[in-house]
Image (cartoon, rainbow, N blue to C red; front, side, top):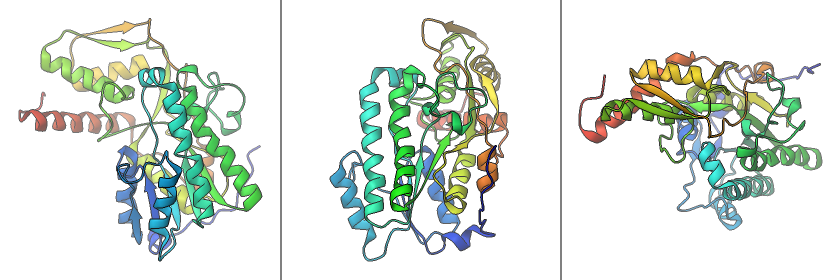
Length: 338
């Protein structure tokens, strides 16, 4: 039975953030840019976004330099750690060692050094890929250690999962306030649409729109369409992270999701309909499906810090499609395909 937790909810977020100095790693990225915008809107005293050109977080000396540069003369109150090397099934299969090493090395030393430098709170973002391949549906946090993750993204998932172990042990031994969140697949405007590294939603949107532009009669989709996924709109995800940063102070892992499950086939059909692509969908069953099913139990997020996703899936999807069309039209200096 899920235990109850005493949690103080700030009546006004601006009261919590108004004197806070916050480092947001990955703050120029997809989720990070939304979190940075929301932090500034909440009145954070200073939001620091380290860039890779100056601070390569896979190098411990760069982590120490970042903290040295930002903790004087005033301390940093919080690190929100979003930086990661991510990609779809293809990218994970092609570079598993790179995904393991880089994600481990930009996470574990950063949490350790944040504790060493006296940062008050560390917010760690894990990944849904940390769950066992055949975890019971819906995924509950207590199932995290039941079995091995799905093979194509296990190196990435396990590297991120080590922050959970670290968070719990540092709290136990040092009393350090770190939390660990497990966001489901994100989507929304400004997502990564690079075909070499994008996830399924931006990849499908790009395929449909490019096929329309070129007058092509079919698109190819990996797998057989039977796998299911859950998606969380990026603005909702950012709100969940910030509510946890404000209100949650334990090291039990917490899922962030929408609790809406959809098959890849249904997702593809929806994107085809919303983009207006009229051609054929060709399924390549020789390519992997990835994890068979994904759907989260989001009880803890609601109970511990009052988070519930707000954006209906098709509404968020249409915003994403519209944004990408605008980018394509801007780049080509031509009217968007309607």
